[in-house]
Image (cartoon, rainbow, N blue to C red; front, side, top):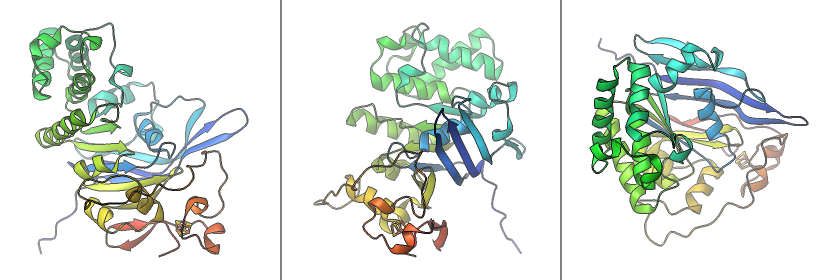
Length: 334
Ligand code: SF4
């Protein structure tokens, strides 16, 4: 028999709970999230702002402020190299192992590059420094690698950019520099948090094209965090939809776009223009807002906004169940 054993996912998040203990309230920002990121694939983590997707990313990087934040439950298994799993949730956020993982194994691209690029150093120096630390290269070789990376992200006049400071670059160029910086140490995983949101539409399309191409070149796995379903439709292989700190639906990207099951996902799809949808799509916003993550919920968290709400929804929390092969949803309708 020639049965293929599926390769274990490079990142596996199990029942992750990240809470923030404030003076009077507890913010349950991430409240029992599980997903797997297969190797060389892209998982889109989608939801409105305040649903917990960025804190999920910050938990994986151990970059949230601790205290008041704390991972109170769950595991974050990272499997690189020989397949040995490390549980990131148990590591010291300031320790050497976590510092090695951050940047070397998992790199992050943020929405606003100016928050992560140092305005006082040239672009070349910033990339080279990261390469020196993580790859143990000398100054000259590291600078060579910085030039190579700027070339790879197709920035114009890369040699000149090496000596420029972030403020001398346009928004699109800065995002290219961030991607070059993130990929310079050949990380196994790239977490991209709203990588195109701050850019205008033409530049967004260029950055998405670039990310698609670089993923193929670098064989990386990408966790793409966004509220923009158009971005997801163009980059992701699978999609996890988050609502109030939990995943409410998970499916392969085409399946999700054509057969969304959860009323929240349907609402998201109906409220934004989605690439590939036929013209004449009528946009209907989801009523209400995501409640604060301090809300104590009984039953389904989406009930106050759901057009299909039933009595059971107000009493019992719907579990995440497989409704079709590879397609899970947390909803009493199924
Ligand atoms: Fe709507 Fe009920 Fe499904 Fe929640 S469980 S999404 S309230 S139908």
